[in-house]
Structure formats: structure tokens, C-alpha cells
Length: 293
Length: 234
Image 1 (tube, rainbow over the protein chains, first blue to last red):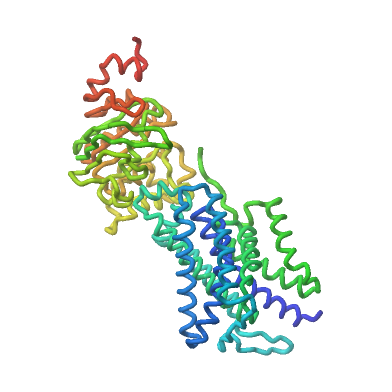
Image 2: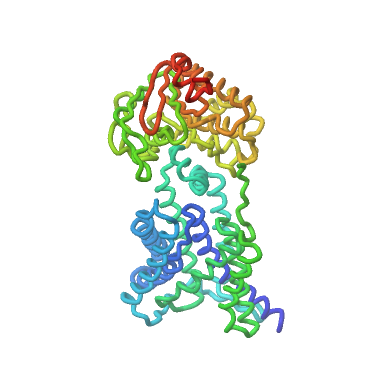
């Protein structure tokens, strides 16, 4: 196994991990505010893939990018309003079950609308440009994905820690009733959280599918679960944690595949989940409680 | 003036507040006393819009508050210091104060100075996470945070709960001071003795209804009150 091969696989892993990280941030932010795992998130990501296919059929790529991001955001906000908001005062488990329902609804809707046949993902020329350096060949998306992910993660951390909106988000995630007494419109903070989460999922889907070439109705379900594992690994509720978790899951998956055990690459993710839950349930950057009784 | 008339509130299937009417005149300290579960907290939470009224009306200077969202009620000049303080433990003291002024857009420095004058301890600890403060300091922070919204009416739910007597005395001194500076206070307390001493007007609440009213001084002398709430002999 040559050094070039290792480097090549590492880049592939970081690229996949970047896409995972962006989706994991969506899981973690929604969890932070609603204390609920949005199991439909992976399928929103899959729908973003289809949006790109249909948008690119009409528009050039530079129009399609904003169209796909906007479309995904609208989808996410509509899901929140119809499936989660009416359950605001219900037990958390009910919202989670509703989310699982939405996940199946989206998969079957995609099956009905777009058929179960894999459809080819459009080629975005500027992302597909291939660089060759000695034995290593990488497409531009492979290089862009991790860099973009780190930039977006830093932006998100700044947003949450240093803006008024971020302050409102942190307040809502700790104590919604007290946040209301501060004059914060909790529902609008939740909507903004879904906007951010779905926007990142749309960007993640572009990075992910550009490297994978096809979309089918179940394209979101397994990556969705892996990103959920990434969020748990990093410490659910923590944005830097989601990023680190995403990179770890992505790199491990590629490493296992490269080592010739590709049959186990999916299983590995879930073994990882079980190990985290047993050994360190709060994850790498888990929330520590400073509450004083 | 805050005017509550014929308020009914159901809470988890129980008629928690039944036909309650009282006024909180501008510039006064008004207190509701009563035992645990009498419906005092529910009354305050209904005024701030966290609970839904079944019927009745709550008006501030003549305009109806029932049906408004909590953020609109806060914008109208009412705020609540919740029972158990509920500061945001992971935020710094300064962030907690800033979030109290969330719906305001003006410059905050003057108000921050006002709060730091009232509670010098908060200034010393402004960069500390609120969760690391002592109970009394957290109560100061909860009051300071509420004042940052520049309220006309400050409602306080059991500010003395779980605090040492000497700290409680300090909190009540501050309540009087805030009132002197022109903020109307609606205070609910199980510590009836302390509350009645500083209150201009007082109401006794039992199982969802108001049973007695008067000035603070009158109720302090009332035999039934002494027996029930002040530890006096029958």
C-alpha cells in the first residue's frame, strides 16, 4: 500500500466526512432546540438530491445551487410546521415518532414521484474538475468539501455564540418558558433552526451526490443514520462535535472500504454507536451540566 | 394599572384559579400570599401568557392582555421572575442580563449600570457562568435580568424560596428599592410575614380563590392570617 494510495483514501474520507458533518450539524441543532432526533433529516437530504436533478434540467448550475438550497429549506420548514409544531406540548416521544413517519412519507413520496430507479445526478462542471498530482487524482469537490465544511462550522459556532439570534437559540435550548418570558418568540427561533439545518443538508447533498453520481428514494436513509451516529459521537447538541463526528465516521468508512472490508463499512458505524453509548454517552464534546440545585 | 377581573384558569383538569379579581395600582407593591398549590403561580403565569385563561379579563392600562403572546405581553411592560430563578446556567452573568433586554433595541449600557448599582455582586461576576453562582446571587441575577426589559410591572414568584434568612432580607430590601425607583411590583410569597411587611396591598389566596384582602399592615394584624400563615397561636 503506497503513500499515495493512503493519501488518496484519506482525501476521499475527509470529503465524505465533510458531507456527513454538514448533515450531522442539522441533527444536532434541531436536537439542541427541540430535544428531538429529526429522523426525517436524512430524507430531506435525499429530496435535495432530486431537487438538484430537476433544477439542473432547467437552469444552469449557478441558478440551481440557490434554488436547491431554498427548496430544501422550504421543505424542512413545511415539515416542521405540519408534523412537529402541532405536537409542541406533546411528549417528546410523539414528536420523534412523527419524525419517523415523515421519513417514510418522504421515501415513499420520492418512490411515487421519481420512481425507484436510480437517477443520475447532474454533473456540476466546476466541482468535477479533476486534479492529478503524481499517483493521486482528486476531483475539486473532494478538496472543496472538507474546507467548506470547516468554514460553515466555524460560521455556525460564531452565529450561536456571538449573535443575538444565537443567544435566543441557546436560551430556547435550555428553557423554553423562561426564553418566552425574555420576550423571545420561541416558534420563530425553531423555524430559523430548521432553515439553517436544512440549508446545510442541501449543501451536504450537493457535495455527497456529486461524488456518487446517482440518487434513489432510499439514498438518504442510511447516510442519514450515519450522520445521526456522527452527531452522537461528537456529542449531540454540540456543533463542533457534529463536525468532528462527521469526519471520523467518513474517514473510518473509507478506511474500512479501502482495507478491503467494504461489507463491514456500514456495520462499523452502528457498532461505533453502540460503543459510544456504552462508554461515553455524552459523546466527545457532550454537554456538561453546570446547573446548581 | 394592572387589573384582573373574574379570572378562571384550568390547569391539568383542575380549576386552579376561580373567579379571581384584583388590581395592582401603579407604583405599589402588591402581594398574593397563600399556601402551596393555592393557584398563585398559575395566576402569574396566566398574566404573562404562559397559561391560557378559561375566562375573565386581564388588562394593563385598559388594554386586554388575554390572547396575546408572551413576547407581546413583555413588550407591553410586564415581566416575571420565575419561581426557582431559572437563570440560563451556561451563559455568563452578562449574557443573562443581555437576554433580559432581548426585545429592546436601544443602548443597554445605562441599564446595565443601573443593574450593577443595584447588585454590585453581579458586576464582580459578570464573566462567570450563571450556573456557578450561589442561590442568592442567582436570585439577584434573575431579578436583574427581568429589570433589563425595563418593565412597568415586575412580577416575582417566590423570590425567597430556598434562600438563607439573611439573603432573603437582602432580596426584600432590593424589592423595596426597585419599587421606590418607580417599578410596580406584584409579589407572591409563602413567606407571608416578609411579604406583608413591605406590601401596600395584599390578597390571600386559598384553593384558587381570593379569601381576604387589605393593606399589608392590616393583614399582618389579622388573627386568621396569624394563625394560618405567620405561625401565631390561635
